[in-house]
Image (cartoon, rainbow, N blue to C red; front, side, top):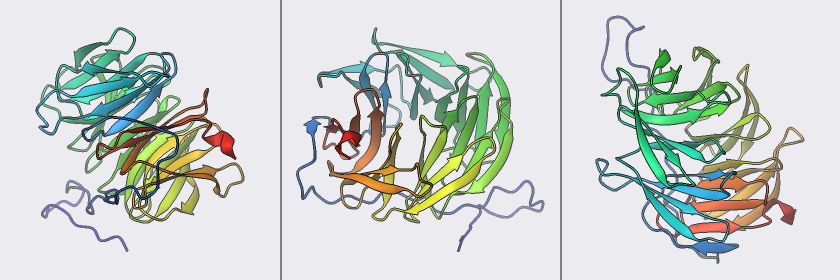
Length: 327
């Protein structure tokens, strides 16, 4: 049952805030009881997200500061496991990559661009949005950025600095992924996913389980969503947005990564990551690995068949080579 609450009353229901529920969270993982598979690289703090960049062959881990007003940092790991840190010009809230050597991070009033090879970060201000609290970011195939805000607005940029389209229909934009020139918005409070077309206008909107938390796009054109409260992996097609698969995944699924062969889901209640084959229409478990504590973030390198599991509690970065090949 969808227990909705709203922030106050309004005489016109069309202008009232959208009904929401308490957003779901990953489980508080227990201490590791089994040695994590593969290699574990040290990384402290509370990392929030990770992306793999194909051009530089690097894993990029985003860790905000405990003080949300302090500048964030990126930890960049090369193929040998060596790490370098790139400081950002200020606080950040979300990360996206282009796979070609650049990552983008949302911040208040705009975003940062980071050249991974050079180690340089620069701020870009979005016109007329100096006070906007940007909370999500994605890069489309055509190079245009889509940002989301804490007040529930999705912004599609027409240039590096100018907004081409705004859609304010969400309680909060918690995450955005791009599939081609379309985007899909995740709203945790409404536990919903909403498609935006190439113009940035809203299209279909669907309920996403009982408490959706994370979202990724995979190389085969699918969008994966973890329904952490409902214990499910949800698989959506885009353009039009349609739910194609829903499969039970117990133990508080949260971390997600897509690859050409398998969909990867972490179970935060048991420090486990599972690889599912989606080809038959019903997810089929193929591999399972013990992980570092609090496996909140996943990333995958298809060219080397390497799975990265990033602990959200400071237990390090786990590197599992030949991850799908173990099938």
